Image 1 (cartoon, rainbow, N blue to C red):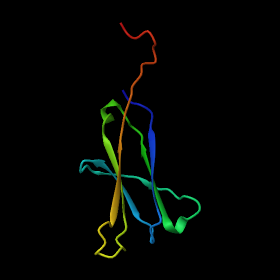
Image 2: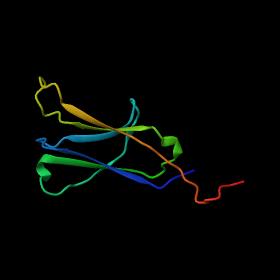
Image 3: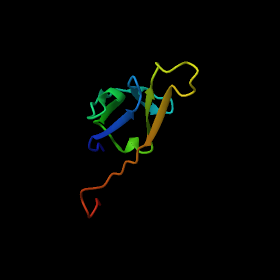
Image 4: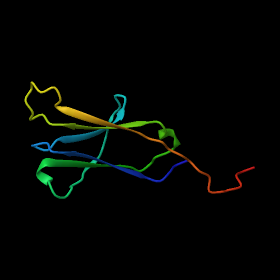
Length: 102
């Protein structure tokens, strides 16, 4: 059963130059194509990425998406040149028929 599409936004603020954002499936899964998404205000110190999943199904329940922000312009001695945020999907499927099927 296919469900409606889902959209997720990842933002990194305060990095100069702005961080590069990358979505991937966890653990160690392939990169997921996403679009840069402009955000208002502090544009020069912010990055944003929009991920749209068009074919989400019950098979995605429990799957994890990771957004990683990386700034390779930071000095090599810095311990955190990248930060990640992990999102666990909870997919629920409901029947449109309140009486169910026999």
